[in-house]
Image (cartoon, rainbow, N blue to C red; front, side, top):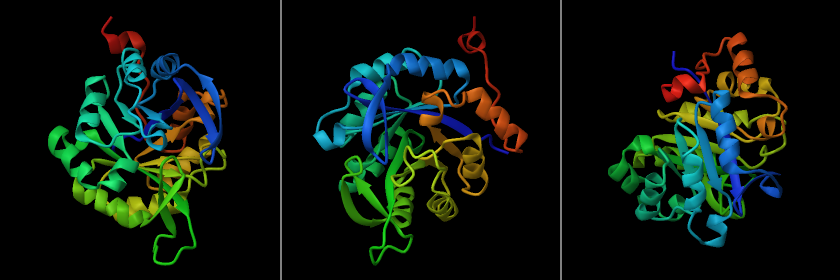
Length: 266
């Protein structure tokens, strides 16, 4: 059995980690490099960094912050926000990321997924999807893809876009539920399960974790391979070891936390 992954998310705005609810009303919660180090030492399996205003502001990602985070951790590190070209992706990888997370840029130019997969390998390309429940006709999944930090509807069906992303070469899919984001009421299990059952690549659940049970549900009812956490760990409700103990007790296989000294070889 492949171990499930817990991935703290650092949403960064103006150089600071920030957190909001349903992509709105963000408040600063800390320094990205210090928080990355903290989660690494706690035993996080991976880390994801989003420059949350880069796409909407039509600017490049803050590479200096990416480099600062990369210096602090020795686990897989995914970076997204404002990546529109192959050169944008290359710059992020050279700054220390192991994976690129593409979202709005991929919707506007789907060939970016295939180009990234050819240049860097599918394992480096994560298609991140902002999805929202909708009553709009012609969307069989009942969820629409939204871009630009939750600001711009696209008319794309979430499941159809997930399948297209897989076909074009994405190695993973991250399902960011706008409805659940920051609510601490649990992940959107419906769309997570629908996409997990509809594709053959790993699916990451994102948005809504408020207690350990929500992660258990994401892995069991939602069929996710990994779960992103933010508020639940940023505000001290739980630690990464707390979450792993709970999941292990619930029959979910997770990686053992490795002490920092062992990771660094000292």
